[in-house]
Length: 114
Length: 114
Image (tube, rainbow over all chains, first blue to last red; front, side, top):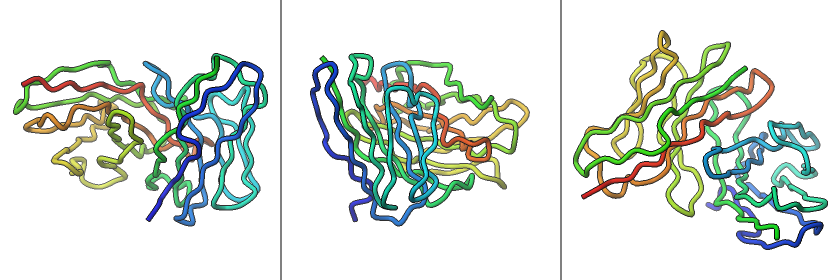
């Protein structure tokens, strides 16, 4: 029972490089989310998706792009990484977007941009 | 706008003592509230959730929380803290109806002293 799996777990990028973070869930959830966690800031929503083929901006979307081509996968892209994007990234999914739905989280990806 | 405030950044409690972590929310509709725990280097695990009904909800690991509409609060409690409870705790409000997702507070770090 994998739940939500994030790939990779760790990554170091140079400024200006690009990369894609992959999130996969095996629970047939409609909704998926990307958060970033920074010390003292809690978790801030980057982008989210309410179903296959849909994406929406969250609180801090600048510098990131996302795609949801398959229901089980939600990709987060950094086209030109900046040191300000050094963070821990969490993916989550939920069955739907109704208020009483629990979100399940992945283990996180620690990204350092040098 | 919807928001969650956790007034205490860091709390230290003696093992065996009681614990209360504070959470205040701002949300225009009926709030759906969650407490998550994050152990070092791990993802987030749901402790408990409130949707409606009894304002005192029980969760895992001996935690409970009380919803007080008049105070816009959802404080987390535990009668006797164990060393393994040392972690970061996040309060969150489900804001899907407002066109977003789970909104998190900035977290409270709990240290347990022997």
